[in-house]
Length: 160
Image 1: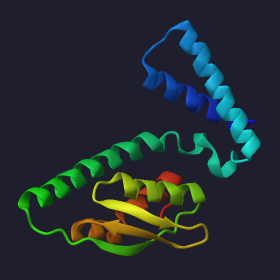
Image 2: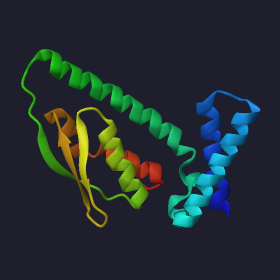
Image 3: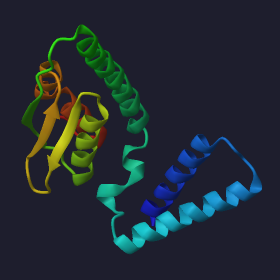
Image 4: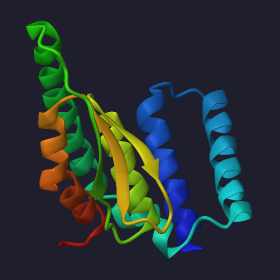
């Protein structure tokens, strides 16, 4: 039951923060959509100890701020490469994905894709690696350093 309460509260706070419109009809529609999502998660049996939004709640804004900064840095790196007119040297490689939970691995893969110049091309359940395409060697080096993987580990509440 606590998972449903933490999911409902997380969705409500997110909805209120992102919507910016506080009218009775929208409160009703927001409440109905939150109820629908909670009901769907119950039917799909995807909510539990591994997927508890309350687990990551205080760490998530810190991670988002860090990821936003990484996006800005990667944007500058890609823009510099494009403006310099040097040929880009794309590469396809694999990085270790040893996150504790499946949600952590998906978060890691999505974070790689959100960062400009890199895309997660393959993430398989049970595989300990993620296949990544990078436009620039610097982006590949950043991923090989493991900083993003360590940050996702921290988000999961685990340190390597």
